[in-house]
Image (tube, rainbow over all chains, first blue to last red; front, side, top):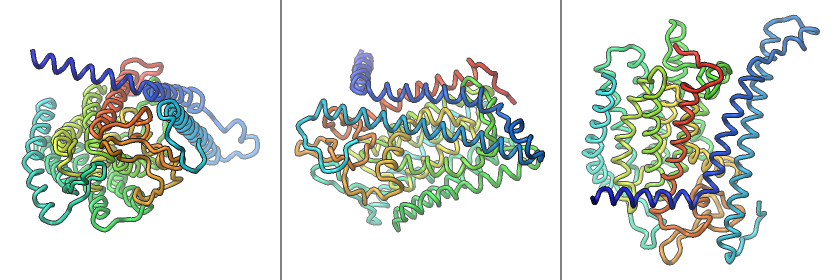
Length: 115
Length: 351
């Protein structure tokens, strides 16, 4: 009986902690979905990308075409990762400052540029 | 047979850690390795560098499957695991003893990935491999190949993991608690993988056992700190399980709290800066013993500061909130695993 009670208490605590961090959990879930969407986008559009058709008109070297294809693919994937991280950073900052304004408005903000 | 080995390794690492940690605590105290617990009002002295035990136990227990499992690839994987984790742990130990620079640490930890890269390059010549350079992604299998990029990402992954785990170690149990969830999730995901990731499961079981006992001593009120040697060892082990176990995306998902914490610190202070040198602190200890987020605009928005955005928290509550967030990410990681091997648009290319 004590064990069941302890489990119930732990679950209650877990739920209350989850409730406290609903904003963060929303951000994490959104970022996770964005990660999945990004992977599908990269697989469908960037993976099969061929630089050959554009470059072949000017240069006929196959190694150069492969290199250009690789650079374009890595560049696009890298750009997506940077955008993903940037969105994550902005969301977290926005969440933090809004929450602080709402729950701790009495504390003075130290000098500096607020995000 | 695999499940028996997983149980044996888990139990042996639990027992060995339970036996060695008190011994090392005493020894380190005698050697004067003492730190101040700054988040408590009475500023108690706590034994530091307890992570040495994590390094020793992880490496010693990893030798068991190497002796008893007659499989060349698994043996190679374990040798490489011990080499890389040993090197990363040694860098952490040097940092604890001599304070390495903030820029040199990521470079050294990235360099520790060399045994892994070289071993795989050699094995690929003979048609074998200790890790796949074409990982399976959720929903699309390995339709999107990152063969060349993958080699370049290995040193970055090891350096990032080691330093991200180190950055999480802010209050009692804040790093060791979530790490239990991370290694537990990786163990489940290794068993869910199709085919099962044997090396992922074996190493996760070892690290899970190690972390459970370490958490017992590191949780509030802490009797031991891990030091950089412990944090780097755990980070290195995490990266190695992700790479060799083929659990890259899943590891990123379960370690999201670690990623957000490290990324926010790096972007706030614009690069690698020693924690001690950050001018504006993200948190303060209040007279009632609770920890509050500061409102300094230049202070890094760490995960600890994020959890305290709604009000001050006790030290043990912060660590618990970290665990809850990691637990949520663990659920997302398991869903990611299902989306990789069981529900997908493009089937994964299975060996």
